[in-house]
Structures are given as structure tokens and as C-alpha cells.
Image (cartoon, rainbow over all chains, first blue to last red; front, side, top):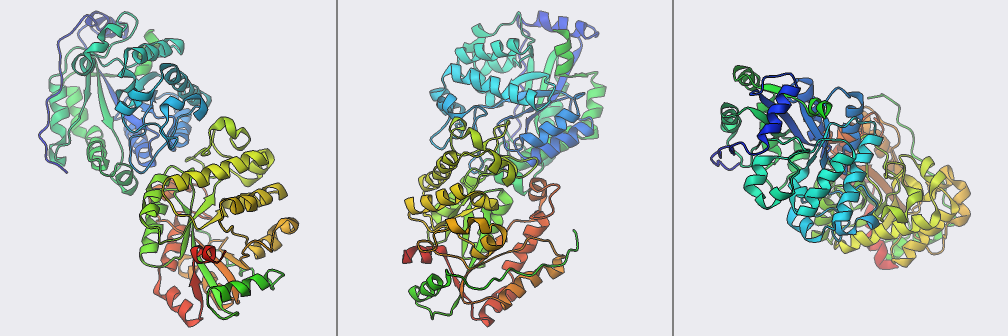
Length: 307
Length: 307
């Protein structure tokens, strides 16, 4: 594993959206300046290893939210657990890419309905670049709706929508579709404002800040660190956390044969990475730091209830 | 694991097909009464665990043939290996069912082209009974062709066709389609004569014994045994092997987290079963017994070359 230095968290000053955030804390019964934090697991359904780690993290009360990749082969396993646990937070991790080398999936829609989303082998494209190059917006809308409906048909009580690899932020049309589908299904959508400001500022005019709950600080590691330094990035993020709505993203799985094979040739977000994330999020040290810093852990379901 | 007694191998007397079998031995340059044996691994592509075990068995020269499940999520992994190893035997394990509880796949064709093969969630049916009840023959033909074409497009040199869970033997129309598609792609199809005589004698009139290479004795365990007795069924089958064309089927995988989760609630053909099969087929004892009994191990590729 590369011993890269941890990169500091992106913490940008409040923007126009701060107003609605303060309102959120108050709506939830907390003082205006509360530091709200969603502790979120991405990629439920991608593999058995991920499902098992996410279920374990929920059972340890280490996370407050998770989002499901509906087109993935292990969707039925997490769907059965989610149906049995409607008290937990289950979002749709809108999945428009299939990024791994040796393990693939297509869309939920019939292939003839979403030809622009599929490669020559019938799988979703491997990268957001390829997806962006080919995707027709109305086929994206169709596939997002199909993923939501399939999860609902499986008996899952949904809490929110978010986006695998940020693909819905690839173009203004897709940003608008994402928000429209959220409204259509009466589900909040993740709008990670600091990320958009930094990575996709050209999308800012298309964000409906009045009608969406904005996540001011979206915290997601993007470079690996040595296992014994894994905590530094997250600890610093918590140290510097500001009042408002924050979401911390973890990629949970076990560092086992399956996950190593899924993430082959891709140490970033690889099997060891996910094990390190699991070890951190389930650690006593993390729990203690949250308490010490007076951080209020919330769920998307609580946000949904305010809408 | 249930300590069930091993059940004796099905060894039925030669039928009309014996003639062509003797011819096969001679065509391959062996005496008429040679005991020919294909040592075959099913279910390549179903999981990483299966792929890894099949590749290991090939690298130990423990098997002579394998067949690939094209619609499965791990197809790209085995396809890459198969493309790199055209000297090995790669059949299509025609897959028209998705039998596991928590891990699923659909067809290769666009869903709108094969609606009769898919359940309400868009997956292949879980059982041959459900498949048989719904499947329209022309959609089966379309899907079988799509699986073959996808494997060819992935650069795999094909050696034969066979059938996952025997689904193509579910009706006379399907038996005919199976044989027709074999001819269409100039590939031999597995016709396990002893199994058909015993399990599906009503299909006998539809078997083209003149134009197919018939496997007289198809040997596949169907009840688990204690690990230390695992060898008994196979050893007895080898003891009683007769001249003609024989095929011994193994379900190879490692008994690890992934395979245990794939085969959950299904000890038959479960993870421990597959590990036991792997241990047996790669054992020195198996190799020694083959030699001692004068059994000639052959491939489907050699058969293909005689056609």
C-alpha cells in the first residue's frame, strides 16, 4: 500500500446555503450552531464483503446511514436485510458505472431502454468520463427511476438519494434530473456543496439551494494512508468540523479474497482501504471523539421527516 | 454437514450410442475399448472463489475441461483467463437459471427480448421448474446464442456446450434447440446418456444420437458426504468405469466467505462441497487411480477436432 500523506479535508466557508442548514438543526430540535453529522456507508450491495461489513457496522451502531447499489449482484442480500430493518437509513446509491476490472453489472432497466448507458458488453461504463460521453439524459432518468422502484418493490423504506462516483454531477442536465427525481419520489438528494464548489463549480447554477437540504461539508478520504495513520484524516476532519450539516463517507468491506478480487489493480478504495475504514468507524476512539467534540449524529430519515 | 451415505454411480448398459463411442476412441488414436474420461469443472464465472479454484485446478493439470456461465458477474475474470489460455478447454455452461438466494444475475440478452426467462425482479428464475413453466423456446434460443456470442466476442476459443442444472433438458423443444445451436456454432453438446435414461427418458426420442457425440457415463455427485469420505463416490466411479466416453463433473471453489454467502442455506453444492471437490480432483490419489486404471483423460477440444 502506498504510504501517501493524508490530505487535508476540504473545509470551505459557508455559502448561501448556510441559512437552510441552521434551519435544519432547529427543525431537528437542536441549537442553530449544532454540528450535525451523518456517518454514511457507501456501496451496499456491491459485494458480499461490503454487505457483511455494513451490516456489522450498523449492528455496532457505528454508522447512521448507508446507500445501496441496486444494479449490483449482491443487491438481494442487502435488500433482505434492509427490508427487515426499516428503522435504519437506506438510500439509493445511484449507480451509473461499473468500475471494476473483473466483476461487472449492467443497469436495472432492460438494455434496449438504456443503450447509451451500456458498453459493448452490456455493462455500465467503467468510468464517469465514458458515462458522460455516451449517456443520454432521458435514459439516465429512466435508469434512476428503475433503481428506486426496484428498491421500493423489494420492500425497502428509502431515506435519500446519492450518487456513486458522483456521476449525476457530470452535466447540468443530469444535475437537474437528479434533483427532479428526488422531488418526484419525495426523497432528499445529497448535494455535497464543498465538493461541488471545488470539483464542479460549473454545476453551481443548477443546484436548487432553496428546495434541497445542502450538505455543507462532505468528507470523503481520497488517498490511502498507512493503516496506523488511517485515523488522522478523519480525526482532523472531526477536529475542524463546523456547525451545519456534515456527512462523512466510509467505504466499508472486509479485506478478504472477494474484495481483493473485486478491487484488483485499484488500491484506492481497495480491500485494505475498506477494512481500514471499517476498523476506524467501529473504533471506540471514533465514538469517543464524536462525544468529546459535541457532534450530533443524525440520519437522512430525520432530514426526510422535516420535509 | 449431513453425513449422508454416498450413493452409487449410475452405470447403465451401453445403448445404441455405444457404436459412435467406440468410433470416438479410434478417431482419437486409441483402441476401441479405451476408457475415455473428461474431467470437467462446472460453474466457471459464477464467483471469484469458483474462478480461482478452477484456474488453480487447471494449473495443477487436475482437470481437462471447464464450462463458463456467461451471464454471471464474474464472467469477465474467467473470460480474461480463458482468452489468455486458448490451449485449455472452455465450454459454455448454458445458464438459464439463477439459483442462489442472495446473489443474482439476469440474462445476456436485453430483458425485453427474453421476458419469459426473467422473474419479476429481472433475474433468471431460481429453479428449473419455474424456468420450464415460463420459458418460451424461441427466447431460450436467443439467449443461448447471446451467451455463446458474448463468450466468442470476449476472445474465448470454445470447445463445447453444456447445461447448468440441466435446464435444456426440460422439454423436447429445448432439447432440439440445444442440439440445433450446437450445430449452428459447430460445437459438440453434452448429451449425458445415463442421466437422460434415468431422469428424463421422455427426452430420448429427441436426442440425435447419430449426429452428437454421446457421453455414456456422466458422473456427478449429488449428495454430500463427510470430508474424509468424499473420495469414495469418485473412487468407486473410477473403479467401475467402462470403455466409452465418460465425463466426471466437479464443482470447484474454495470454502471461503464469498462462496459460503453465495450458497447460503444450500449445503448441496455448497462451499464445503466445492472445497471437497477441489481437494479430491487435485489430489495425488486421484491422479494415481486414473493411471492405475488405464483411464485416458481427454478434452472436448479433442472431440471437436474429430467432427
